[in-house]
Length: 147
Image (spheres, rainbow, N blue to C red):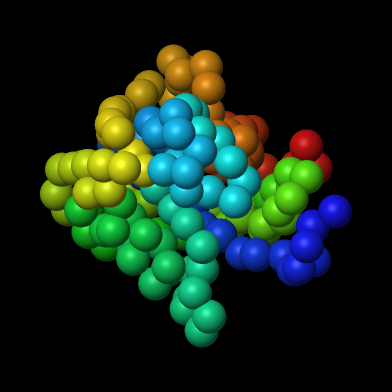
């Protein structure tokens, strides 16, 4: 049973360049991977919790910069998912970014140990499930699928 029975809201940003997606490898240590939805040791897109009063775009810009050092110029909402584990529940807003400045850097080395570009047809095996839903929605050209 979830203690506080509250649903959180998060953003996941699908950054694409030359038909490749930027994914970060989460730390294997659950205390360092820093997610209420768990996902230690998986590959994830940049993202995180939306702050009170923050727009989807502002949240995406902040999270991407904090995690990668990239400055995104524009995003569009492409996906919505309902992400539930035994002790947490989040609604994830998936955003697509094709216009950004900079090169991805490891800004939070305790949480994300590596950033890498993957072809959309050669994705890694272990993808953080909220990120995987955004990718699946994008590839299926669907906004929401009840996985």
